[in-house]
Length: 213
Picture (cartoon, rainbow, N blue to C red):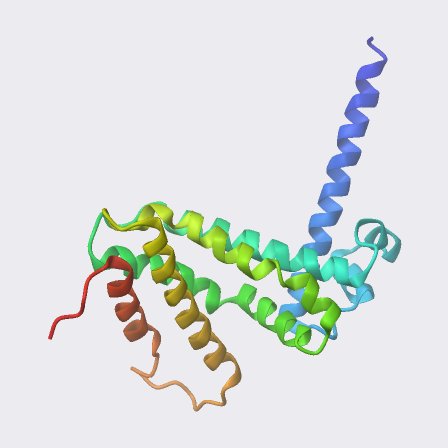
C-alpha cells in the first residue's frame, strides 16, 4: 500500500506535464497565427515558440490540421470565458447595461483572438478540408455566447427573441470588425471610431427599446 503512493503521484505529475505541454502548444499556435499569419504557422514554428519538440507536438496533434482546429476551439473557449468575467457585474437595467455588455463582446472582435479566427477562416475559404473542420466551431461559439449572456435578456423577453436579437448584434459587430481589418483607412481622427454609435443602436436592440426622436 505504502509503495503505491509515489507511483500514483508520478502518474498525476506526468498527466499534468502532458496537459501543460498541450496548452503551451495551443497558446503558441494562437500567438503565431496572430503575429505571423496562418501559412507561416508551421508545426516547426509552433514547436519553437512553445519550447517543445516536433515529436512532442506530433504526440498531442498528429497533424497540423488537428493543431489548428484545437487552437480555434481554444479561441472560442477563451472568448466565452472572458465574456463571462466581463459581464459578471453589470448595471442593473437600461441601455447602459447593454452598452457595457456590448463593449465586452467588442473587446473580442477588436482583439487578437478575432484576428486569429479571421486568418484561419480566410485560409479555409481556399482549403475545403480545413473548412469542413471549422464548420462546427462557428455555431458552437455563437451558442456559447448566447448561453453566457442569457441572463442579460430583458424581463419578459423570450429566449428565442433574445437569441434572434443577439445574432443580429453579433453579425453587425463581426461585419464592422471585418471592415476595420481589411479595408484601407487613413490615420484615425477624433470621432472617427464607428463603434460607439453602432454600440448605442445595438444596445437599444438588445434592451427591446426603440430609439425615440
